[in-house]
Image (cartoon, rainbow, N blue to C red; front, side, top):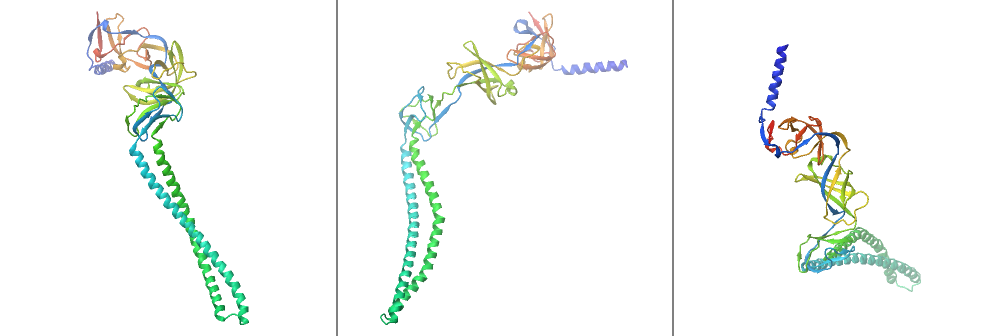
Length: 403
């Protein structure tokens, strides 16, 4: 049984030796080149600091739809403009010629369709007139034939004249159904084609309206009321189609755009509270948008003022603030430092009581803020830890602190 215990102990020692096989036995560093902090029991404040800037809550960009040469500048950066107020007038000869050519072709097409529509209506009217004429002839000839029959019986009208009238009546009676059928066909044709003609005419009229409105786009107007910014055009300048030539900032207030360390990406949520201090007074904020894209080890969030807005804010003004990630909690805390970049909070160098050395120890770190980290296990209150950069002894198991 004793042999078994010894074997187990030897196996444990061998395993521990394997874990530290890749560590250097020790390095020597001057004690004045490292920073040492004490683990203490206190309250961990779950906040992170941020650097932000003031930005308008709303921005409306001014993009040139057609472009051309600047003919007249009617408003400049800093001016307060009303909705619809002219800002820049452009000149574009090529566009004007294009509009005239397309307008001419559209008008020609509209005229042709209107002429065909008129032809259909004329054909219908002519058919109705023909049917009315046939009906009139039937009535007239019927009365005439009736009068001539009595005269023919008395010998006052020749047989030839009597039969001529009857033949005309017979011919008119045969024409009546043919004309009625032709008129019905004409009505069906109109019912089928008139909606198509009307739709095509409406489309051409809309195209004509849009074509003519292209010339209106040579006068750039303010889409909303506000203050004009970034509009630095000069007369004679050529501006390409689609170019952005400025922006209008409506008077809808300001927001704060902040940069947050990527470490907190999974902990920042819309609705979380923040705070900035302006002129010695704290102002409450609330997260309204989180952009999860990380760039240069930071991500961006937008915060709105929760309540009143500080007076005198300027777009681009830099602000320092704090974002509250969770509730405060009692526990062990350790000042944050450069060591976290090398260890990720998985291990630290614990300084011996005499201050002459430090040994590597596995620890478990919880939440972090700008100033402190939350210690979950591996350290006791009162112990001291090297918190400066670990580059010089990243692979060392022990550090000798020389004086």
